Image (cartoon, rainbow, N blue to C red):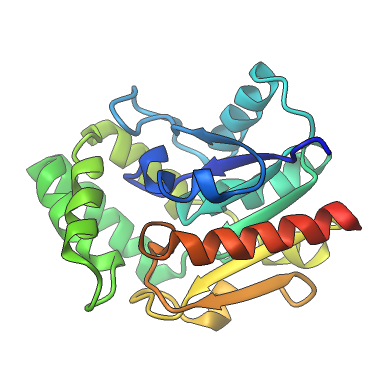
Length: 239
C-alpha cells in the first residue's frame, strides 16, 4: 500500500523541530515545512491567504498529490484557509492544538501589543514570555527551553508579519463545519490558553481527541499524538 502523504505545519515561532519525535512515529510519507519568517528564513507574508498560497506552492514543488495537511496552532489557521480556498488540493486536514475561530477583540489587542513589544525590545524578550505561556505549569522545563531555542531563530520581521496574519485571519468555523474533507482535531486539556469548546468549534462531524498535555503535545506526548493520527489516517484510508 502506498503511504499517505502528510504535510505538517508548525506553530508561531516554531519550526519542523517541533515534530522531531512525532515524525518517525507517523505511518505516512511526511513533509514538515518551515514557514516563511521562521527558523532563520526571510520574513514571511502578512496575510493568511498569502501563507496558505505559499504552502500550496510548496506542495506543488514537491509534486504532492492531495496530501493531508496537519497544522499546529498557527499552522492550523493556515490549514483551515486551505480547506476553504483550495479544498481540491487536499484529501484531509487536521488542527493540532488549534482552532477554526478567529481572534476575538481582546486577542487582537494582545497581538498588537506583542508587535509593539517586538519592535521595541527584539526577539528574545518576546520568546522568553511567549513560549513558557503555551506550556502547562507542570510541563518539562527542558522542553520549554528547547522550544525557546527554536524561537530565538525568529527575526523581528518574521514575528511581526506572522502576528499580523494571525490577528487578521478569517473565522473558519463554518469552513470546517461544512467541508466534505475529513478532519482530525486534537486538543490538550492542559492548554493554558484554550478550552475544548474553542478547540472543537465546527468539528461536530470530525474526529475529536483530547489529550493530557499542554498546547505543545507533539513535543510532550508524541507517542500518544502519533497513535491518534495513525488511527485516524487508517480510518480515512479505509473510507
